[in-house]
Length: 220
Image 1 (tube, one colour):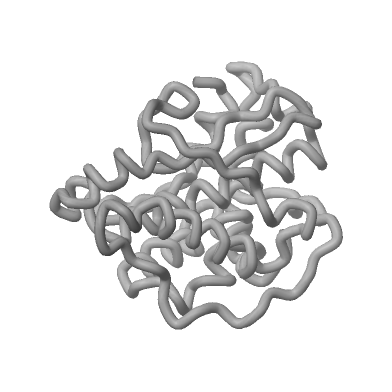
Image 2 (cartoon, helix red, strand yellow):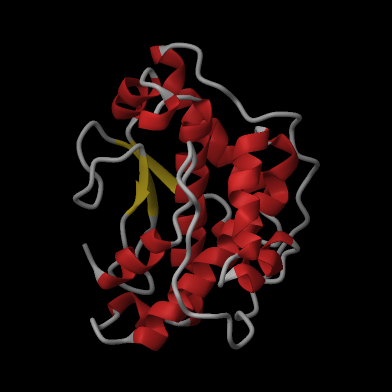
């Protein structure tokens, strides 16, 4: 896994009892200005839930669509990612939803979904990766990661090739990722189940909390 992917995964949100966490660096300079944005419509009353094996891919795609419509302040050109489906690993890791690091500033960034693995884990106890909130968290987190990669491609593509000792670059990536988490949360917080909303909201109190809060109001 690349240094950039590790930096983004550090700020991936977790649910079902695991605390959300961020990198150790405190917020510094303001986040970069976003490209042209558009206002989002009112969010739905609740996020979609899985009902059976046949509904898994549909629900995962609906979650991506909701995030695309409601992310606060996300650049219009970034809102709608390409989505692919796999039954194998994505970026060398077998997870419900993932985004592989782009290879350059102009490379396509794709959200990869694994409905088969998602259904298999969905039926497990929540603490072991099952349940709707874990799926919702995984897909929305992947969408935020997609937004972060697009932002990096546009504003600072040098971050795509982080060196192992580039602490400043790693911190900057973490700040961008946390701001994009805020964009997703800001648009969908009222639709999230209470536990999931609390998990995302907790990032406002972390060391990268200033960036998360900026994102919730479209300030990335």
